[in-house]
Amino acid sequence: MIEQELGERIEILLDDDTQPDWSDVVTRVASAARGSTPARNAWRRGALGRRRVALVVALAAVIAAVAALLPGRIGSGHEHVGIVAEALAAVSQGPVLHAVLQVPTSQTWDGPSHEHPTIELLDLASGETRPVVSQMELWYDQERGLALQVDSVNGTVTGRSLQTPTRTYDDHGNQQASSSPAQIDPGLAGFLKGYKRSLADGTATDQGPATLDGRAIEWLRFPPLTPSSVPEEVAVDRDTFQAVAMRVVCQNCTITPPTYAITTLGGVSRNAVDFPPPKVVEPHPVKLYDASYDLGTLSGATRYLGHQSYWAGNSVDGLAFTGVQFNHPTNYSSETPSTDSVIASGKGVTFYYGAPKPPTFDAQPGQLYLSIAETADIGFAFHGFNMEELSQDGQPLTLARTTLLPDSEGILTHIGVWVVQLRKGDAYIEIEGPSREIVVDSARALTPTP
Image (cartoon, rainbow, N blue to C red):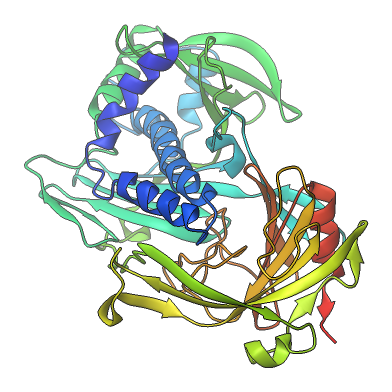
């Protein structure tokens, strides 16, 4: 029942979705049936939508809450004592609210089995990993009715939006007329009113001391705005009285809601920020994945690609090298291919280890295999390679929605299969295998082909 209530609560956030994913899911699944690209892409796109909504909900709750703490937002005669009063005093002064929330990206996704997937940064030199971090940064000038939001994953910007008293803008070129001042997010006025009321009448309650990441804190609970919503809690550091984290209280959820770190929270001057409309970023609307494949040779891989190719040697963790496939992918912006709808085409190679045999390299159920796919061309997908979507600056995006630094680190994910995506020299490389150990070992063992 609680999950249904949460769904109703965030339903309003979905009303402005100008890029529904369902047709994309159908296309990708159909393409997968033709052997063009793994079907997991369809789930990935849906998961990203859910992740964005989760972050919006979290930021909406916290930013709306803290907006009430700025000077002049609470009437005289309603000062609280103890940690609530100290938390109010700890909010920096300034008419523009600035907030930054961060959370491990894996905590904002839930896979088909309602489990958080693995989404980590892999240090190729040491083999150690650390979380990929999603961030939302927001500036809110309530008096002028302006709100600017920037979303990013591990430093890669994934979206920008601006609300003004008359219009809303996003970086896909969408504009929508508005007859009211900006809200921090759709439906946020209710959050703001509820938070101000709870502070003013004393219903914000101290849940007592606790520890969060080794830090002594107090959780302040703010009651639900309506019977169909749920409470939120803000963690306040007992030493500095700064708000350091936020979470939704949902005792009956099948998945524990994420806890968002509040890394920045306070007021800044109007000179500290501009509110420009976001620069329009053209989407990369791949609708059809089409490719032909030839049986290749190890010695011819570098010549075929036109740049140095890499493999993991004659065997990896007991899986012997089986062969190499030369790929000729072309991707289209329409389901009916034509010269006018070509998005990108190029060359790729895929090295196989384990049970799959040439020329098709199709593994049977239960067979262990490893694939290493690579290309220097960008903007398309082929067997074993899933970095066809591009960032706002035109770089291939990983499954985690990040771009890649050359040579030093990769992105490790588990979304039904284990995948490492990395960049080595001129090549973008994707490694897929049955276990965490084998894909990590392969990534660290990459060497130029003979």
